[in-house]
Image 1: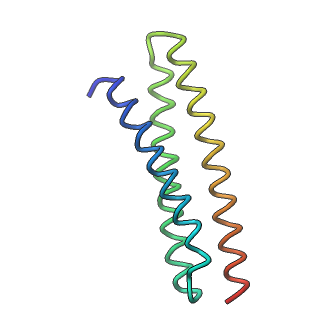
Image 2: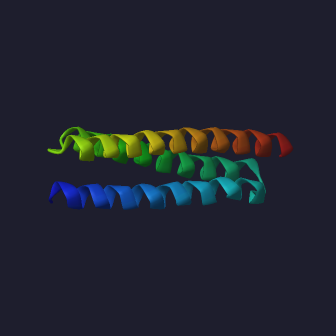
Length: 103
């Protein structure tokens, strides 16, 4: 796989994962019991872990770019995505905590 193709695929996957984690996090309020919340929490954690793995790969590809400008742009994207994953993780934890206190 060429580097640019892999970069594009990873970027698309990161967008999909980000949207899926956001949707899953919003589902916490629909859980009827603590077991459902735990299952949902595990799914969110797994998606976040995959997100981080893909980010690490994107960072590797960014550092390996021939063009310094292209590498810097990708590293900026990586930083932006890392901030998103941090925010999603915080929201997921908050949602889980709030929902478990209601059950």
